[in-house]
Image 1 (cartoon, rainbow, N blue to C red):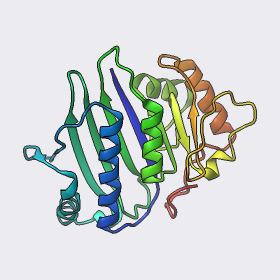
Image 2 (cartoon, rainbow, N blue to C red):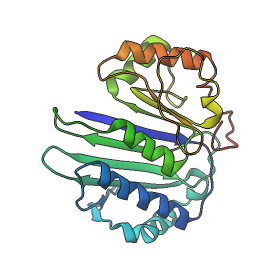
Image 3 (cartoon, rainbow, N blue to C red):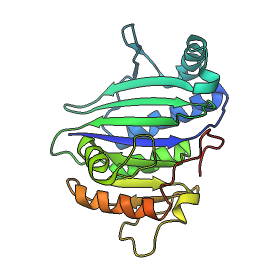
Image 4 (cartoon, rainbow, N blue to C red):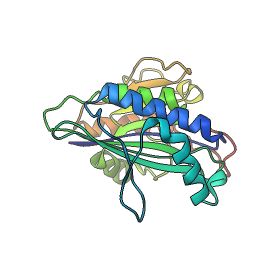
Length: 229
């Protein structure tokens, strides 16, 4: 089964060493949470994949910055994949460290797992929140996103929640009273919401609408001028 764990934030310029540290910690935590402790490989747009050891991340990001002339504005992109035990695979795709005016920075994790496997979705989202300090994040899949677009008017790029959601501290205080979805606080003051079990798409849609109407999912103002609400 395929699921996606995502984190998004606005402009936050960072030196390559800081980005490498966040990436390195992400790989370490993923290997602790999922049975994918093998070799990480970097995916290139027009060349074969290459091995990418955690201690090489600073050099890899420097090359990416040199290749992308506008990375100081758009953010430095990196895409890594790792295959673990039978049926397990993870892809990490991120753009970070830039000062974009309209497109959010992001870290997107795609997890492929056997049908009967237990995937620690909330732990993975909490890890991304702790490492990348985002504005919002979610655990989602194609069916959830289709339902939010069709039934709730969700627009791609706006803040959103899925089966689980993460909201930064400024968004967390806007969560309406009586919302049944709840979860533990994240160290930065944000909150992790456990919204619905797998397949409970109607519940996700209802909670999304309540959060949006309460202002907890208000989009960041454009042009972007801050990493979080």
